[in-house]
Length: 321
Length: 287
Image (cartoon, rainbow over all chains, first blue to last red; front, side, top):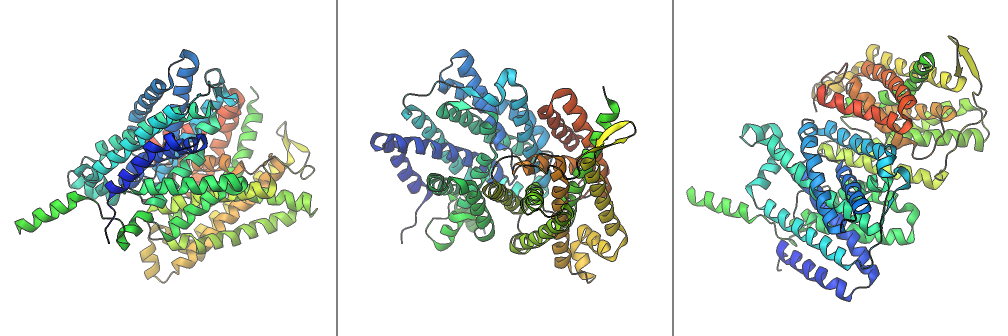
């Protein structure tokens, strides 16, 4: 049986993504934009949560910051939405640098609680400082006439994230992050600059969510604090990575596609139980496939075990002995 | 500025926070699990109390007895079905499991009780004059019950055989196991006790606050703030911090409005996390 390599799967997905707006209905494009936004969020979360192993319950903070920065720029200065998204991404990075320096001194449950609390603080501020954010009323943006340009931009970002994760997975940098995940003290003692790498990963994983926040606001044509800092965005993102496989190249892709379809079906048919069922999916994944679908695939031989770097290193070690 | 009113209001609020945070802290100390669903258990307990008192027209004390008992059984089930099975797994698994559980509970509560606010009119209503200010009876009773139970559980932990077992499992599970302590049973009972405390806090919240299914998410971050400020795993720290944070929240809300007032708590929590992660009376628990 021929194994499926990460590149062949990614290539097939890429071709499908390029063709979709040409043949698909408006509904399909709209659904795909949501899927791709979550895909980008999932890949970003995978860097800090999957590779570096930090339980990050605050990614939605950057999503929300980006949503507000982007919306305010569009609302007040009529900036084109794609430029607003770039500025929002930069704003995400700029806030993540000091925040990462401070929060990453915390480990395990402390980091999780701190980031979880931070998202709630930001939501409270967005509600409270209503002279800037319009508080609970929200900010209304001019709706986009055609969603296809938005689709292509989000798809491009998703492709970049996938490629970057593939490069990361095959690099020494990726191995160093995995070392931090497994045992931070041991990694430090091996000379891995853990603090710098953690902060770098944290900042890198904040940029795309902030940009996505801005694009999401454009997509909805509206933003308010509960939408921008929604904990179900956080939950869905983490569920996607967990379901697909944390710390893998294809995990977020599989998880995002699968869960987006399941969510859409649930949302369309049983909107009352939609969020509860996302919770149940996470619970089941934690209990039964904690290593994700992709790892199941690797075990049963359907998906190639990636990391040519490992093979090269192993071959070199073999020659030396 | 009505200093006395604010102080008393804050301390009364702190009592409920103490009871809730103590349960959360107990669970963390023994199991190293952050129970994100703790607040939602409180919310469901509060909503059940309303159903018992208003829906079934039973007296309030029935809820005080039945709801914590039900929560304890529910907690035991969660432990057996979920948490015990992921005991050796990385921390992220238990965090995700309780986070998911929290989402499930909120949405089930919305399905059962609807999304709106409810309350307990007529139960423990009225007010008394204390130290020259008016204090509502419901808040006073819930404060006294909450603080009483928190102190009783503290006594249980410090001075009984069971408490010694709990503390030894929390410090060194392997050694406790070697010494013949049935650590699985201790964990089960601890988790059930912790959820029962959340349940009782919910019952006590019902007459004093407007309650809805989202109540849990508002309380859980405050309980987090309490156990971080007090020191994770430190029981007296949680009680002390709960009272302090209750006052800070009430004073902050008075000056800056309710939304920003509760944000003060999180900012304080973040500050403590960054400057003194072990908290006021922290035991320096290793994770």
